[in-house]
Image (cartoon, rainbow, N blue to C red; front, side, top):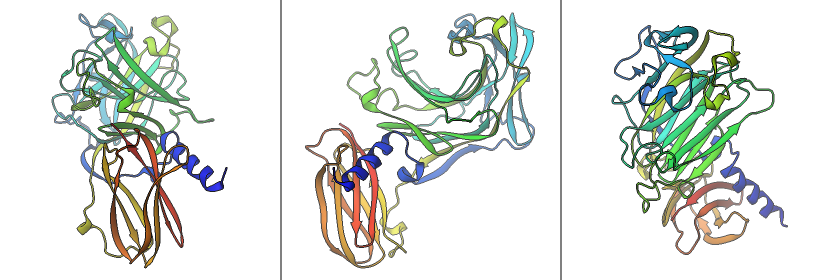
Length: 373
């Protein structure tokens, strides 16, 4: 197999499985954040959740053992602090903290991230997740759930998940874990994020991509003809630590082995929206050749590929499929220095990930893009 084809296959596979964020970087603008400065929880952003889910959803539907109290939520030292304690209260053996932005702030698409140090030990279940502001498509999980980060017990791994499909018990889910050798996520702060687009959701830890899901992999029985449902509605944010529960494998106080109290420390939560640069916002002459990527991405028919040249040069732009086969030669000519744009028409090609390769006399650049139907 030619070396060029091997390199392309490697790049494309990385684009959907383990790609550093720099290779798929979008342009984002900050639209909302809480840096947790001061000593008081911002009530315009967050509301503590109280109770154990009873009477409608005792144990929060997961056989959890804690009772959530406002007293277990604090802002201190530049962090939101959610503390889990062995403390009989409300008929439960443990108390813990949970906050949400429901009815305060909800979001549709963008990058959602948190920098946090998570609690650890047998029975601990910290999470950073999103739920629909309104159950447009039906009760859980027909209207969806996005789990940005959750972990349990010894915290040598974290996971990202989606819940979708029909209302319970006809729900479905996908889940991916990330556990680099020698890492315990409770030892220090890490950055957890999703990048959420109409037809794809990507999960990152410390800006390393570890999971990607596309709209071909989710659905809602509440909107069978809408392939973007249920993740095309506004979702709000949740932060909590459960004690015990099905996810931990421990549903009895006797099997909780964590050294309590434990603290979930959240340095900040930030939400960004993607911004598409216009030609007038780009410098006329880049200092080196650039391949900004395709806009929109994902796309259903056509997408604009934008690139810059630092000098007049021979340019070739080729689109490759996941097998490394050239499916379209978009450009093969000489162009002057400056910013350029060319349209790629995906009609006639199947849905999937494609690589756009820009070749000049000084080298080449590759960006991935997602074609959906």
